[in-house]
Amino acid sequence: MIAFILRRLASAVPTLFIVVTISFFLMRFAPGGPFNLERPLPPATMENLMRTYHLDQPLWRQYMTYLGNAVTGDFGPSYIYHDNNVAQLIGKGLPYSMELGFYALLLAVIGGVIAGTVAALKQNSLIDFAVMSVSTIGVTVPNFVVGPVLTLIFAIMLSWLPAGGWGDGSFRFLILPIIALALPQLAVFARLTRGSMIEALNTDHIRTAKAYGLPVRSVVITHAMRGALLPVVSYLAPCAAALLTGSAVVETIFTIPGVGRYFVLGAINRDYTLVMGTVILVAIFVIVFNLVVDILYGLLDPRVRHD
Image (cartoon, helix red, strand yellow):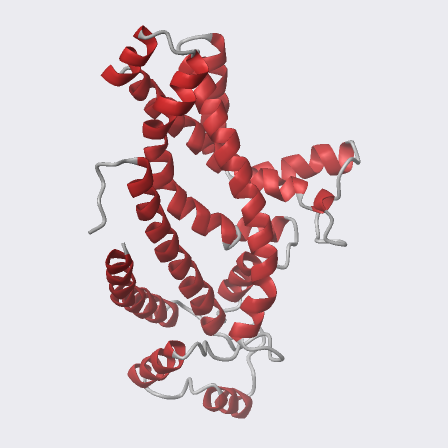
C-alpha cells in the first residue's frame, strides 16, 4: 500500500507540471491584462507596473520564474489585492470554502445515496419516478438559478434565513449556500446509486441471500450496498475537490469570502497569479481525492489490489 501511494504521489508531479504550464500560457494568451483599465494609465505608470511585476520580460522567462517560485510554495503577488500575496489570499479564503464544501459534500453523499437506494428498492413506482424527476431537475438547473430562487423564497419572501454573507459564522448563514451547492451533486449521487443498486440487487449472491430468508435491511445494507457504492466512490473525487475548494458561482451569489470568489474576481480582473494559485489548489485537491478514492476502492472491492 505504501509503495502504491508513493507511486501515485510521484505521478502527480508531471500532472501538476502540465496543469501549471497550460494554465500559465492560456492566461497570458487571453485578451487584456491586469492593468488594462477602461481609462488607460499613463505610459510611464504602465511601464513601471510592468517592470515591478516582471511582465516586461520575455514570456519564457516569466514562465521559468513562476515555475521555480511555485515549487517553493510562492505563487507570487496579487496584481489587484496589493496588500496580500496569492498564498495569503488562498489562506484567508480556504477555511470558508472548506467548511461550506464539507457540509455540502455530506448533504450530497448522504442524501443522494439514501434517495437512490429508496428509488432502487421501489423501482418503477411513483417514488422511483419522483426521485428521478427531481434528480433530473437538480442536474439540469444550474447553481446560478438555484441560488437566487432560494434567496427569493427563503430570505426575501419568508424571511427565514439570511440572504447572503458569512455573518457571525453561525450555521443559519450557511443553509442556503449549502443547499445551492449540494443539490446538483446530490442529484448525480442519487442517479448513480439507483443504477448501481438495481444492478447489485440482481446479482447471484444477493438472490442467494434473499433465498436464505435474510431481512431486506440486512441484504441491502450489508451485502448490496458495498458493491453499489463503487460508482459513487468513483465520482466522489472530482465532486469533493469541487465542493471543498468552493463553487465560484455559489460563493459569488451569497458573497462568501472563499477561494471560489477570489477565482472569479481574479479572472475578471486578469489577476494572473491569483487565478493560477486557485487552479493549482484545485489540481492538488483532485489528485489527493483520487488517491483516497483508489484506496477506498480496495476496501470496498476485494478484487482490487494495490501492490
